[in-house]
Length: 276
Image (cartoon, rainbow, N blue to C red):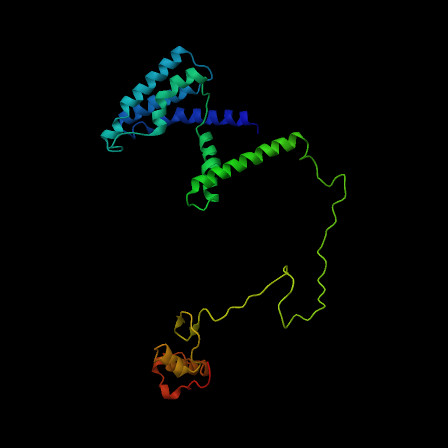
């Protein structure tokens, strides 16, 4: 569907909506509200005309004045107790001078500026790291503008038509030569500066994790810890640690046991021996 057909269809839908809107709310809202909306719709009908003369401009001013007078009902009813200060409603007073300067709006929709706001502000903001983002947003918009200008230039030169491989064979894939290891370097460092890979091992453990049936203990870096249950209990100040392991082992040996493990005598539980 062409753009002008879509605009015409939307204008017809809006006209029908405005024709049935006032009869629909009449009797359900206070009369002053209905009257204020009537003046606002009159303004909307006038500014949507393709051609506007001096009489139309005077009618626009009259509709705006009547709307500003009757909209005070929203302040009186407590809908806007602090007064009405809405940018789009304030823009109504500038329509006459702008029409005289630039011509009839002819159904111009303010969502055009919202679309530009998304491209120029919202999307660059999402691409930034959100810290002092203004400079990043400006750089993003600048680069996007340069890319768009380059695309127009390339298209005018015919550089974006077809494929770059249409009239020539694709370049062969060049692989790096295979590495031939003739020396035994297991006992020393590699002599060459450029190497394919390097593995650096940690000098010491950075963190120790001790897992028991009911505890997960994360510790700061340590150099050595005991490996026996009683030694671990003393080291981490957990005297119940050996008993917890014993009850865990009892549960593993008796899978059908569904009662509370605390009720099992510790003497009936196997004791942990050896390293953990």
